[in-house]
Length: 106
Ligand SMILES: [Ca+2]
Image 1 (cartoon, rainbow, N blue to C red):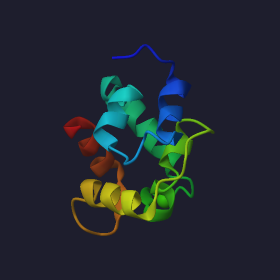
Image 2: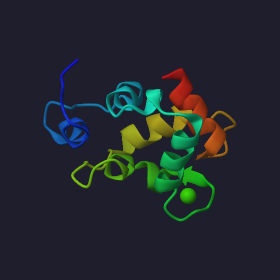
Image 3: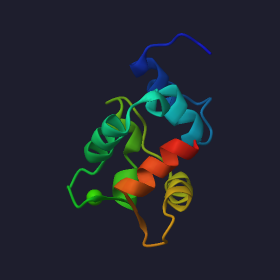
């Protein structure tokens, strides 16, 4: 494990070397796995920009920007893969519980 700072970690995904987004690796890199359920919920609310109570596809696309302003946008393919991974009940968006489950399973 490299000893990069938080911003540098997320920034790494913007480079040419990052070919496909792996949310499990990303959650681990930004330290989400080590956070308390309270803090995971806080992160969820940051990502839920329109405060709908769900992270929709449009919001998922910018998930890296929620961690660093320099984060790149996910491609449509990556966004859909991420949504499919987290959307357990198939309603096309990720709820707080689904997000917590994603983090727990990553
Ligand atoms: Ca939302």
